[in-house]
Image (cartoon, rainbow, N blue to C red):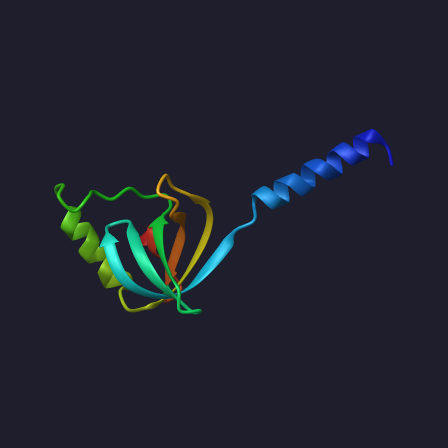
Length: 108
């Protein structure tokens, strides 16, 4: 195998590994704020998830409580799946959240 082929194969392999998403499945048991939820996972564990692509106000900021209420209306107590590829500075997974099949980030 030529060096060029090895380089291309290595690049494709690294790109596919970097693009691999993990999936969390469970029920949204708590809305922490307008862009963070706690999931009760199917295996009984828990995970906090930060929604990718949005930045809602904190609870104490203007519209912070309204943002949390809207997220709760969409997801609280519902079956959810999250696809994530990254973590934030608090080591929480960051990804797309789907409640009842709807992409919550897009709705928000």
